Image (cartoon, rainbow, N blue to C red; front, side, top):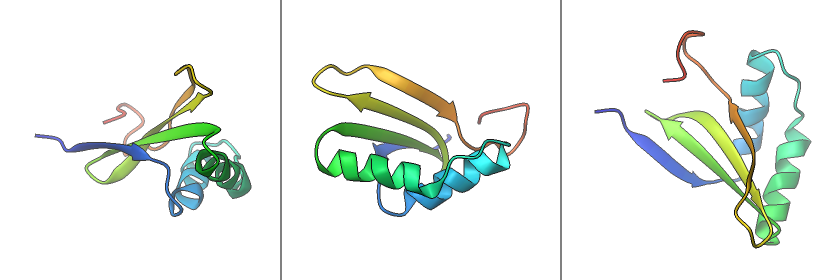
Length: 84
């Protein structure tokens, strides 16, 4: 069975997420995800990340008192044909 973990953004994630976007051809600076972490610490944002078999795959962000997903991005794919 595939192991899936969902957790909040942590201090080691910004670099990993930035590199994953870069590998997909999108430039998202590490500082952007560091900002998300700071906002999370201030309880202004919750950023969830999903890991499949230990590899970061998906990130979702939520703002305010309403839980509204504003971004859900495939961050890393071992194969272009599959997210898993």
